[in-house]
Amino acid sequence: MPPDTPPLTGLPDRLCPRDGTRVPLADPAWCCPACAGPLDLDFHPRPAPPAGPAASLWRYADILPPAAPGISLGEGGSPLVPLTERVSAKLDFLMPTLSFKDRGAVLLVGLARRLGVREVLADSSGNAGTSVAAYCARAGLRCTVYVPESTSPKKTEQIAAHGAHVVRVPGDREATARAARTAADEPGVFYASHVFHPYFTQGTKTYTHELWEQLGGRLPEALVVPVGNGTLLLGAHLAIEELYGAGLIPRRPALHAVQAEAVSPLARAWREGLDDLAGEDIPAAPSLAEGIAIPRPPRARQILAAVRATGGAFHTVPESAIGPAQADLARRGLYVEATGVACWAAVREGAVGDAEAVVPLCGAGLKTGTAAPAPAPRAEAPGT
Image (cartoon, rainbow, N blue to C red; front, side, top):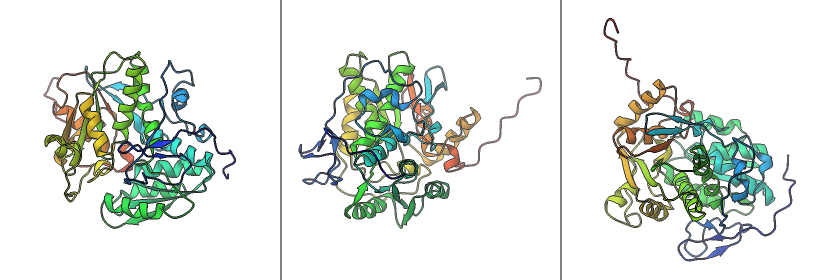
């Protein structure tokens, strides 16, 4: 099914948050031509009570930039369930490709289709690549996904099943990004980067807009979010600013960012009071939370600023806490991948105190399997 929708007119520009450089949305440049940094979207909708179909990302079409909703796979509308009296989980692993990345990928691939693109390239530790591959299959677009050679086999199998070409890159996530960005400079390639392209963040903001509606027109005191490249956190912050600016919430909830202790450059910068990452690179250690094992996120400055602006904080979880947190959720009926349990591990250790909080369960456990053997059930005393 080749792209058959004509390119849009009147598209918003992309805008560099550092130097103000404008780049037309249809321009193939994937980064700021002046500083090589990621771009934002010059798009400022005013939220109103949603009027689209229930339990669908497209319920919020009025505050989303133009894309191609015809390629939808039914993304959005994930349930909210309580974990404790004060903490709830939003089950974003119940998306079509089993991760929250579908929120951004459907918009990004939709844009590619509307622009008449035929060749899409992405890089990922697994979930974003799977989402882009799935929506490219839906849209009839050729797709290549670069992944680290250590990516979970179940994720690469899922990417390939959607018809995408998988390129395994030796080294860590940063080496994969460099290889993909080199390939992205080839003529005719649309770089569907969930990090550099602002359309992806526009999609992830629907997580928080849905939450606002599910809680009856309010947000909790704290949003706890796993952070590698920060796409969900930045989407949450974007939604918070939209809702606050429209007078739909009286205050901004605190954004609490969670990183794996093994790969935590943002948490380190936060502890040192920096506005950006330190100059030197620290080699990434292996982590069960592969989806957030990002040694140098390109949007670090924006992530740190968003957490500060909302009165939040950064937290790290050791590898030893990931397996028990995954097992605990599984015993509550929720089988989540290792990356997706990081926030619950942090909350269990008191990251937000007794604040009312929501954690996202971002990816299904079937994507990676069990992080560590679950502890045996505690034996009950006779007569209980």
